[in-house]
Image 1 (cartoon, helix red, strand yellow):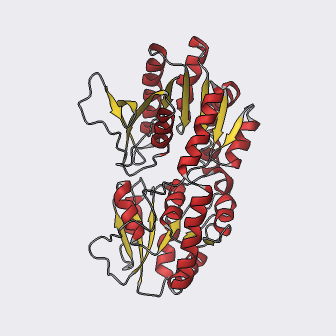
Image 2 (cartoon, rainbow, N blue to C red):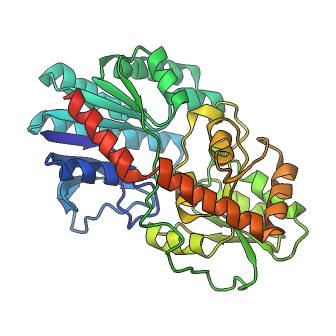
Image 3 (cartoon, rainbow, N blue to C red):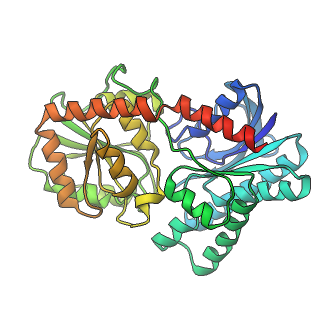
Length: 396
C-alpha cells in the first residue's frame, strides 16, 4: 500500500522533539508499505535530510521511508499569527503533494488541526480514505486555555467535526481524546497512547551531567516545552520553597515563556537551564538524574485530554516521576506505583514531593524500577506501533 503520512512536526531521534511519527512510519515500512512522510521545519526537530531546498522543498530516504520536507519554519517561540500562517502554508503544500502523488491512503496527524484540510480535500477529489490521529484535541484545548477567539474556535469546531466524521478511523492518544472524537461523530475510534523507546532510554544508558552540576547533587529534571500550557512558574515557585541545598531543578527545552521564566528565577541558586537536547543526549541526562518532573498549567481539561510524550521517556529511563496533574497521568503513576501526583497549581505540594523523594533514595529506586517495569509491560513502542499498523491496514 502507498501511504502518505502528514505530520508537520516530524522528527527523527536526532532531534529534540517527539518521535512518534518516525516510529510509526518505520513500522509501516517494515510491513512492506511504501510510506511518504510530509513535514515542515519544526523547531528542535531533525528530519534526517540535509540537502538544499529547491522550490521550497527537499526530499530523500530516511530509515526505510521517504521524507518530503517543506521549507516552512514553525515553533513555540512564534506568535500565534505566525504559527497559524505556517499551519496553513503546510496544509496547502501537503494538499498539492496528495493530489499529484499516487497514494492509497492518507494519515493526518494533528496537531495542528489544519492537517485535516489536505486529507479532507483528497477524500473528496480523489476518494482516498484517511486516518485522523488526534495528539491534542483542538479546539477543545485552546478554548480551555482561552487561546484564540470564538470565531476561530467555531471554524476549528467545523473542521474537527468533518475530520472525525469522514475519517475511515480515528486514532486518539487518550480515552479523553477518544471521547471528543466520538462526540464529533467518529465511527471507528482506537486509543493508542504515546509509547516508550526502551532501547534508547533505560538503566543501561551511561549517565551524563552538564558541566557545573555537582556529582552529589540530587537532580530533578523537567525536559519539554516552555510554553503557557506547561505552567512552569509552578516549578520556579517550588524550587524557591526547597530547603535542601543538594537539590537542583534542571529545566531542559525551549519555548515562548523561557526568557520570562529565566528572568523570574534569576535569583534562585538551585535552578539550572539547558537548551533542547537530541534524544540520545537526553537519554544520558535522564540516566544521570534522580527525579523526573511532569508539569502542566492548572487547566482542568488537561487531566484527560493530554498524553505527554516526556512522561513516557521518564518511565523508560527508570526515573521516579512527580506530576502536578490529575486524571490519566495520576492514575498511571498510581499503577506501580511509579511516582507521586500533586494537585494542579499547588507549588507547595510540588516542593514537598520533590523534597520527600530527594530525602529517600530507597523509595526513589523502587518507584523508578516500577516505572520501567510498567513501561515494558504496557508502553513498549514496538507493540503500539504494531497496533498502529493494524489500524491503518484495516482502514484501507
